[in-house]
Image (cartoon, rainbow, N blue to C red; front, top):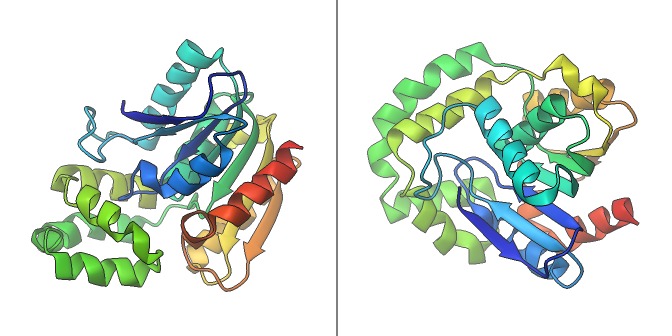
Length: 246
């Protein structure tokens, strides 16, 4: 597993899990802001950015990350954050290990399956995958996602590295993921975040997470679409997690 690390070696470790189709740079700005006081780790999820492991499932990714935390960080981190696919993996980690972290931030994570969308993923990607390597197409997709412009080179470089099989695998897993009931045993203080302009399924998922995870909080960020909180507002993201920790 490829991991980017920032900051000094200490027991205060923060892990941030990028969204599907992105990579570690999703949280690069946050890591730079946090590195003076914390050790920040940015794993590259399976199936992304020439990683050595193909994407198999959200559950497998969660287990691999828990194993990493057990091996290197004594079984618990200070905080874990995750966007979209990374948020789903975080929710799964909290279900598999109730005390894997003290604090968690789940952003824009779908936890209610969409069977029809899941069935359409394979044919849709198979027919459009050849366009992904075209810069004009990537620019169009990038603009649609509303990501800040200085991240385009990173986005384009790493998107074209994702194989068709891996793209289909993580998109199908994401649209088919269902929140595990065990997450109700979570001991972490959890903050759930979604953009005001998200799709209905994401907003419904945010509400379900809030209802299922004891003591969790839900914030709907005004005017934002999917992923814009961590990608476009790193200063706000860091300020908000510091309020949680302090």
